[in-house]
Length: 71
Image (tube, rainbow, N blue to C red; front, top):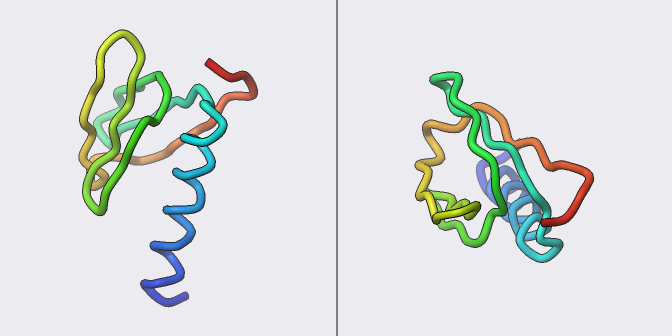
């Protein structure tokens, strides 16, 4: 798979989470679980909002798990 296809897959996945307002769990490589709605992203970061907005660096992310309910 080319690098461009990978970026497009990430963009499509994150765009879907934003558009649908999907509550999401983001697990970091350190084992920490963050919970909220993805509200924005760029090449290097993801913004996650629950009570406050958290800026997460993509290199620290292990897994992103959408929940079945909307926020």
